[in-house]
Amino acid sequence: MKRETISRMLDHLDDKWIREAEDFRPGAIQDAPERSHSMNMKKRLVSIALAAALILALGVTAFAVWSIHSARQQEIRSDLRIDENKVGSYVEYETPDGGNGLTLLSSVNDGEAQRVYVNVSPVSVEEAAAFPNSYFVWCLEGSGLQGFAAPALPVELSLQGDEEIRNAVLQYAYDEQTQTLTVECYISQIFIEKAQDELGTDSLPLTLGMAAAEGEEPRVFGPVNFTPTEEQRRVFDFGPAVYHDDELGLDIEIVSLELTPFSAVWSVRYDAASSFHTPEADWYAYQPWSELEDRVCIESLLYFSDGSSFSTGGALATPFEDGVVKLICGWGGAIDIDDVQEIDLGELVLWENG
Image (cartoon, helix red, strand yellow):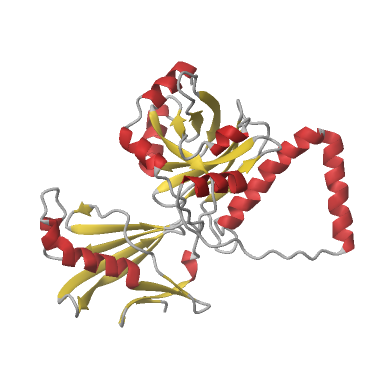
């Protein structure tokens, strides 16, 4: 992408996007699994020998760059809990020198979007520390589609205030030795499909732009090509089941649940839905139904074979389509959707295995 195009893109961003970037707060996921620090001497010597061979072959600087790419891939894989929950929609890429400072690390389809992880270099300490007052923009070359990107932080991390965010970026997403910043591009599946149709290819060229200080040219990284991964989904049909809420005195039909390792879509019906899911709705009158929708998402529990349970959390969006309300939920770290054994809402068993 030409520098002038990135400059115009950064200058004409929707103000709402900029406010969202300034108000950025990392998502939430599970802490990384505990790692064992014990290693027998033979493995230790082999590791040292391999590292030494790589340093001799690549040189100290090149080895450090290769190491940060590999290290970031392992951190992302662990952070998202890919292996333990058998996520098939995740892929890691080879990490040669990136195109114009952009190195593709990995990508995962979370149901609603493609999360694409990249390393950006060189980025100075001052530039990395400017976040969240600074920001990145991803662009799919040739399609005009764009959106915000942010430093990749542990998804279970909860931060408040610019200073906490700045320190977290420098601690978790930045490597000062190689001047490398790890960034997550969150690209909706709608954008992915549109770009593939427009470009006539499954492989999409990704460019990253970094906002510059006033009077300076924005920095441009890339492009690099990536192929989005396929969605991993499991659908539970409830019949539908009718849930009665004693407190609210309301009934709601729970039709189905579409589940991915990172997201859920609950489909529900109730008589008043068409009246309330409109821009002109009386939100005060809708409040009891809104509470009931939340209870379906939050209080329903998925049970796994080890006896543990999981809640999909509150809905992030509630589109109304063909008489059905879609309650769309999302989270950071993966769950094993193939290990779900039972789904309950209070005493109502929505689904059970076998």
